[in-house]
Image (tube, rainbow, N blue to C red; front, side):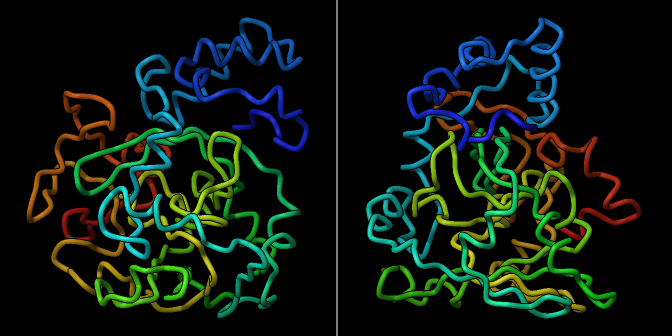
Length: 309
């Protein structure tokens, strides 16, 4: 869903985090930005937000920016939730290269700015679910991964996409310890990667990503558990065989390759049936595919989603 391209908006007109907390206030602010929307258009935008979030438009407000940027899972910067924000401040974001290789017609080492520049940056409000039974709602800024895939032209042998994240002990204190086998890797089936909901994110709340959120480029797949969202990407590789992914390799009985949100399948150490939205006291039911079943369930027709978790 297109809200407005940040490059077109003067800094004094960017919607504040406070306005994001009410969708009614957010829709009203569009008029202040010079977008003359009819009531019908406003309802259409609200409906679009609701469909992307998988909930009623007034039921699910975005998590505050301060929380999104201080409560993070990013083991390269520390295993406690507050460590990434403290330790990622020194992450050097430029220059940044992303290698794209494997089964593609146009492999290359791309400068990040050249890689991102051709694509229209859109803002999408997505629910993000963690296996630890907590969740957030985040306004991501980015572009569909499909656009990049079309650009590099996968060969007929490409069936999967592997994502590799930065592994730099000098900048990342967490990788100095063998908490996980570094570098961190994730993967998607090619049809999952090409789905319109899958994006490469460059920002949140209309601002550039911070290190603790996966700057300068991260994967966002909203119907899967959060560990599928590889952060600080340095390589995207197209493969014929299913790639090995970090958590599926470390704990295969707990973390499968697909990682689709399925509340009927418990994690071995906790239930996945309910989740606590960060900032709320009471838990709420976890939705199949994180609320995106209408959009993505067809990708897994005929699969046993208990075995392929």
